[in-house]
Image 1 (tube, rainbow, N blue to C red):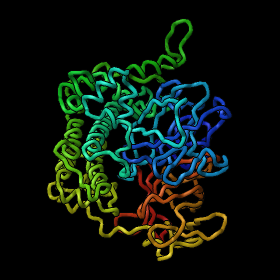
Image 2: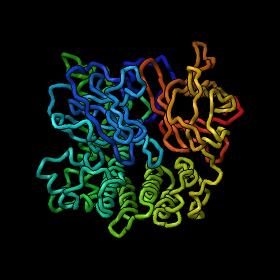
Image 3: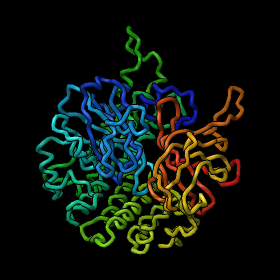
Image 4: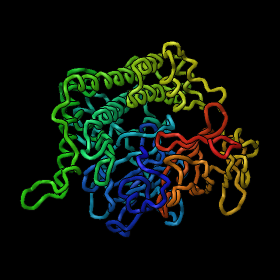
Length: 550
C-alpha cells in the first residue's frame, strides 16, 4: 500500500478506511451474512500476507463499502487455513483473527474475488497490483481452498474457448489451478517451472505497465500525478486493465509467451491498456456532478485529464522496460532452467527475489546502470545461492544496488547479510521475551501482552508463542507518521493490535488504526543489526534500541 495520507491520523473514520481499502473491518452484515457462504482460498504470487480479499460483486475493480472483504493470514490463506486447521469464520467476531473470514453474499452462484495490497512472503515486500479469480459459490468447499494466482487472473478475463486455447498453448491444461509454491503436492518440476514463468511474467509486466502509465493521468487542480488509488470510487491500481489488454492479444497464433517477449506485440498491449484505462477515467469523469442545463462539469478541476496521445518514444520506453522484466523471468524460470530439487523451496524463493529486484528498481525509476546490474545478477548462480539466505532483506539489497556509485562493481556477495540479527538475537534472550522489554523498539516499551500475562516469542530463541497482542509507545514517529494535537505539538501514540511471526526476521502486525479497523504492517530487524524498522507499504520508519528517536 502507498501511504498517501498519515496512516496514524486516528481521526480518519472507519467508514472511509473501509471504503478505500486502507485498513479493514471484520465482516459486516452487507448483503446478509446470515445466509451468506464462507469461501476459502490462498493467494499466491509469493504467498500474500495481509492482503485484502474482497468480493467484487459489480466487477468494477473497487472495494465498495458494502462488499464483503477479509485479510489473508500470515500463510496467505483466508477463511480456512489447512496448515493450522482453523476456520476463521467459526471464531467469535470479537476474535482478532476473525478479520480473515470471507463470506460470499447470498443470491450469487458465481463471484469475482480480487486480492490486492499486503506483503509477498517470498520477498517480505509490499505486493503491488491485483490478483483475481472467478469462483463458483455453489460448489465451493470451505475445506478445499481455491488457489488464486496471476494465472487465475488471466483466465478470469477469458471466455471458455480462449481459456482452452491458452491452457493448451502454455502446456498447463491439467495444473492451471495448482499452488505452484506448495512443495507437498505432486506437481512435476517442469509444470512448476511453467506456472512460475507464466505467473511472474504476466503479473510483473501488468503491474509495471500500469505503474508507468498512471502518471500520465493528472487531476487538473492537483500537482500530484496519477489516477489509480488516489481517491474514493477509483480502482486501487490499473493492472487489471493491462491484464485485459494482454488477454485481448492472446489467440491461436499469439501465445502469452510470445506476446510478452515481442516488441511489436507489447506495443499493442500497451496501446490497448491505454484505451482500457481511458475508459475507466471517462466513466469517472462522467459520474461527476454536471450542470443540468449545459451538461458541463460543475467543477471542472475535479476531473482527471486523459492524455490526448502518448508519443511513440514514451510507449517505446515503457515497452523496453517491461521486455527487460520478461526476459529476466525467462532467464530465471525459462525452459532451459532446472530447479534444485534438493532445496526446491529455497531455490524458487531466491529466483523470485532476483526478479523482484529488477521489477522494483524499474518501477522506482532507478538508473539504467542499477537495473542492468540487477538483471545481470539474476543469471549469476552465486548470487542466487546467496539470495537463499533467510537473513536477506530485499529492501536493503535493492537500496544497495540502486545507490551504488558504480553498480558494475557489485558482485554476487551483494546478497550477503552477515551482520543482520534475528528477532531473538536483538531481543537478547535465549528463551524468548517475557512481559515488557524496555530495551526494545526505539527505547520505548514493547508490551507483548497488554493484559499483563507473560508471553514467550518464538523467533528461533526457544519461545513458544508465534502470535499475541502488541502495544508500542510510538513517540519515536516523526513527520507524516507522528500524531499531533491541534497546535501541531507531538502527542504520544500507542500502536495497538496483534502480531504474528512470519519467520525469524519478520513479523506481521495488524495495527488497529481506529476502532475495528486494522492495517497490516511488517516489522523487520535492520540489515546492520542496530535495530528494527516498520515497513509501511514500502516506506521505512527505523527504530534504534536505546534511543527515543531514530
